[in-house]
Length: 107
Image 1 (cartoon, rainbow, N blue to C red):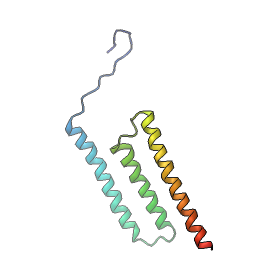
Image 2 (spheres, helix red, strand yellow):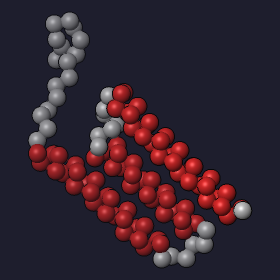
Image 3 (cartoon, rainbow, N blue to C red):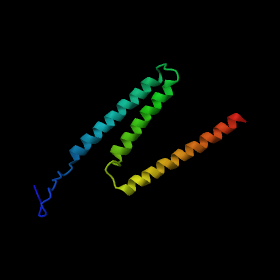
Image 4 (cartoon, rainbow, N blue to C red):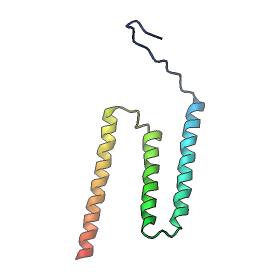
């Protein structure tokens, strides 16, 4: 289908409640599977890899929530910039806390 200018116009289907519930249900099920995977792997003796695997699974869960539940993937650039500023702020707080803890242990 083309519009008056000759460019093709995309037809968007209206989002129904069923499609939203199904999409969010699939994401919720994936988050539950990751929760039980992290719970199971917490009791598996993997040595130094246990916290690493836990952090990787937590990052996957956080990215699912941010990108899909909060719909950050399809949002405007200003909202993405605000989210990035929040991540940088939290990372700075973690870095400062880590620096304080390391300074106390060394002393």
